[in-house]
Length: 237
Image (cartoon, rainbow, N blue to C red):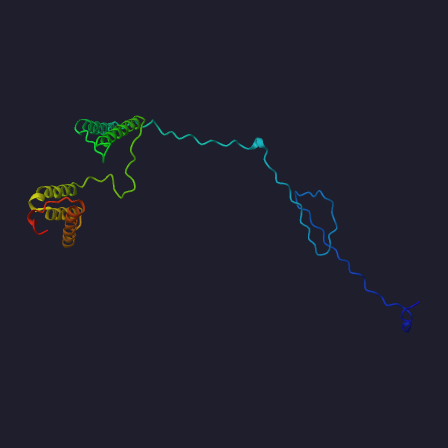
């Protein structure tokens, strides 16, 4: 039977079916595939199998080389000069204890049942203990830390001019404090110290020095009950 009798009963020819295929993946040199080939589907890509990374045997790994121990050199010698500080502390402690036990009386009242002796004796004992601990530390090689944290060049020479000017300002104050009074001598002390340290604002420094002298004069007189010498300004202040 024919489906189209109007054209002689022959069936029309069909076009050949289109076959889809994926081109074979070329084998790379040195790569072997262990799994059998699987037919690829349309539109899918196949990645080649990668070779396994060859790891060195444990015997082939060289042992780690240990860092050489740094040689710090010989142990530092104890600073013998520090024993002088220890002796000074022990001497002061002994003098304080001696003074407390010989010169201070046994004045005891109801308001002070302990008396004046225990405090200086305790202070002297603490000084002796500090001196002993300090001596042991020096004997074991302990040294003081070098100067640090300050903007000071330790290699520079001493500024003797500044040192001598400061000493002169203190000596002038010690000589004139009874004659001229604290306000005047203290003004010279403060102004001279600022000048020795390099400040050249003369008028401003003079005003600040006078203010500091007056403040300290009235602070001692009113706050502590200690009258500093008024000198030539007696009756004015």
